[in-house]
Length: 455
Image 1 (cartoon, one colour):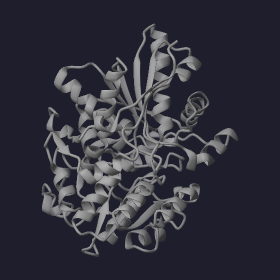
Image 2 (cartoon, helix red, strand yellow):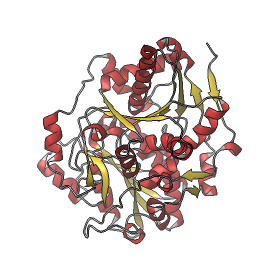
Image 3 (cartoon, one colour):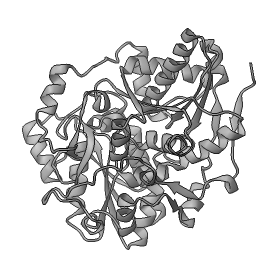
Image 4 (spheres, one colour):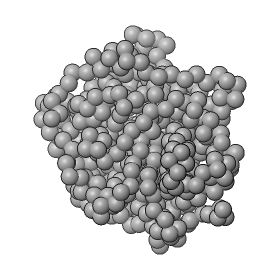
C-alpha cells in the first residue's frame, strides 16, 4: 500500500480564473423570471439586491472570469487547499479503490463558503455598499461572510435558521467575533418572519424563510445589499476554484477520478468540485461520473420536480428553473443544516435533467457512521454536511470491490465539524433519528407549487 499522500500547490499554481460552465453546457438553462412580470430578468432587475458585477456574473455565459487581485490576496491565506489520498481509510475498508478528498476546512470559516464570501464582499465594497444581509443554515456561510465583510469594512446582518441557531451556539459566537449581528429565523424583525411565527410559533425555520427575511431588510435601504451562499450561478462560479485546483492536483498525483462526489444542499460545493471536471467530459469526452448526495429528509434531486420556483419562502426572489420540493417546504431537523434547502441550483438542475450528473439520497445515521470512520482513520472531524459525501464515497468503493474493479474516487470534504460536535454526541448516544420524506409528504409539499411550463 502506498504511503499517505498530500498533494499541494504553490500560490503561483493557483488558477487565476473562475470557470463558468454555462458557456459549455449543450442545453443552456432557462432564464430566471421576474417574480412580478414573469418575464426573463435582466441585470438591472438584480441591482435591487446585488451589486452590478454580481448581477453580471449571475447572467453571464463568459467561459472564464478573472479573479480580482484583492480576492486572490485573501484567498492566499488558505488557498490552494490540499488534496489528500485517504490511504488509512482505504486500509480500513480493505478496498482496491483509491479515494481522494479535497479539503476545504482549513480557513477562517472552516468550510468552502469562504471562496464566494470573499468575492461577494469585495464586489459589494467596490460598489459602495455599507451593509449586507444574508441567511445561514448551519452557520458555515454566516461565518464565512462575517469575516469577509469585516475585512472589507462592511456591516453584516445574518438570519440564522432557528434550529441551527439553537443546535450550534458556537457558530453564532464565531460570527459575533467577526463583528456580525446574528438573528434566529423566523424572527419578529420582518413581516415575513412574523407571518411564519403567527402560523407556527415553534417553527424551526428554513433557509427559504431566512432568505425572505434577509431580502426584505435589504430592499429597504439603498446602501444595503443581499448576499446568498449557494444556489445561484455566481456562487457556483466562485466555488469552481476547488475543482480547478483539484484538476491540477490529480495530474500531479498521476491519477484521474472515475467518479467525483459532493454533498448537496443548494449546490455550491458540489458545483465547485464537479464543474471543471464536467467541462472535461463535455470538451474532451472524459468518462467521469458525478454523484450528488442529499439527505433523505430533503430529497429535491431524487423526489422533487423540475419547474420554476422561488428561492425563498415569501416569493421575493426571481423564479428559478430548478428541481424543488416547493419553496414553502420545511425540512426535518437534521444536523446537516446546510443541506436543509428546498431547491437545487439552476445549473445543477439542468445538468441533472440532461443526464450529466446522478443523485442519491441518504439517511443521516449512515452518513454519521461514515464520518466517524473517516475521523478515526484520517484524523479530520467532518462537518455533518460532508458526511453525506463520505457515505457516497464509501458506497462507490464497496460497490467496486463487489464488482471486482478498482475505481479512483474523489470527493469534496467541505469543512470540519468542530462546531457540530453535538451531532456526534447524539450519534454516539443513539439519539440521532433517521427521517425519510414519505411519498405522502412529497405529494403534500409539491401540491403547494404553482408549476410553470419548463419544457
